[in-house]
Length: 96
Image 1: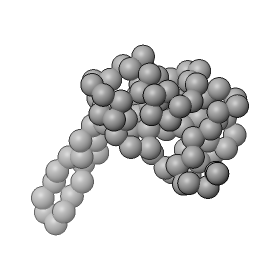
Image 2: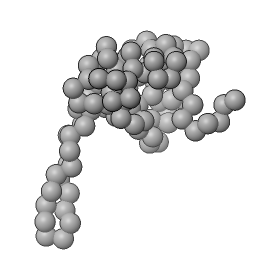
Image 3: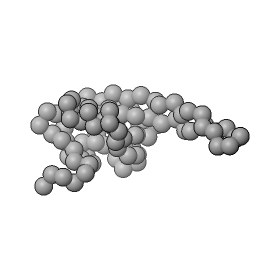
C-alpha cells in the first residue's frame, strides 16, 4: 500500500485538538489492514516528521436508524501518533 492509501484522513475533534496542543499527538483514520510500522513510515513520508510512538485501535461501527430501518456504520481503525517534541503537523495552513 502507498502512504496515501494507509492514511485515510486526520480526525479533527476537540479531544484530538487537545492531544495536539498538550501532548504533540495527532489522530488519523487509517486503513484497517495497516500495522503500526506501516503507519509510522506513511506519516513520516507524507508529513516529513519524526514519529516516536504509534497507538492503534479499531473503532466499532454503531447502529444507526433512519425512519424504521436500521443499519450499521462501518468499523474503522484509528491511529494516535506521537511526534518528536520539535515536530508539528499543520492541518490548517497557519504556519509559514
